[in-house]
Length: 485
Image 1: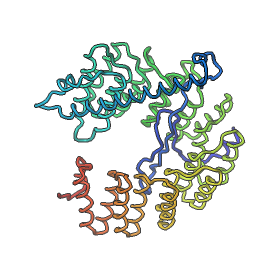
Image 2: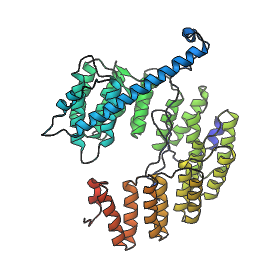
Image 3: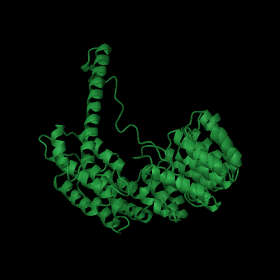
Image 4: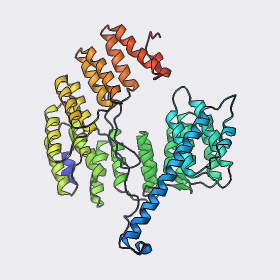
């Protein structure tokens, strides 16, 4: 472990959590700032042990033929059920959409003769969550509550903890905080366990209000806190605080955890080490890394990811290469994520030659770059003013059937604007839409600002007009000074 510590630089690195997150994505990369790309992991795929094919349970079927036949029948019935629920959810959402003085949603729901189920509630509430924007928050919260209470009034149906978490999330997104806390009290009174997800929703709503520590204390003392899939409640709480960047509170919770006699595992160490880095307590980071090894824990997939970014940002490509070799010796084959993390760090250090070397190494090692890896490289070249190399990579990724995402296009559009190629930048915006990639506000804002700064006011106005015609970001168009329709 000390050999790994010796490799480390003294720079900060983003942490990549092994739980909860659904896909890998980028945050807004602001050129010349300290904001970093956030690569996020797929969720832990296996929450229980693999099914044992030699167990007695398999004797329920007399032969492989029977097993195959029953399996097909099961999946066929399941598909019919799921399709029915999705169709019912669409009907419910349409009724809710029409709610108003002329039509009460409750009456419309009664007329549908739809039977509530946990899956239907999830589909409908997810549908409402996806529709929330700056202009319709109050209405979305109201409709979610109408549907939620309507379901509760139907015979043979009772909400689940997941249903409560979903509507709590809607209230959090809609900033209906009083309603959120009332619903939480109702949830607890009815005996539902508060989960790690519940905690994440609540901590998100109260962090800025200074209530975070009180909430954490409440969850620590709670007898109804269900913390799956985490090993224990402290890890669930630490992870929730990490997502919201409450680094000082992570330190406090960690101390409480030790006082209560709980031992750390690899996840605990990863979270706390990252918090120490963010707080600039580098000596404590190194001490924890050493303690982790002393307690018999080897660095895992995610620990190595932290270390690689540290080495990248410290511009230590040789040490990074040694660490990649050490990973292989330890039985952990470097993945696309590891190479991408390292390349991102090196690009921030301005070492594009090393970036290209590790990008090629990634391919040689059988790790085909994904959209995230390509976007990191493209952005590095754009920041360095090497637009031609960025364009080459952009065309290469398309030829390899890697579809550019909104962040790839944002980098390319910025690069074209920086090079004064405004017509190509506007053309790139159109290309983006034809490929089914919807521009976000960052893309529009970047292009409009660049056009205006270049004195191309008419072109900037045309882009704003497109946003307005498509009904995009109407609630934030006022940010463009002097905007007129």
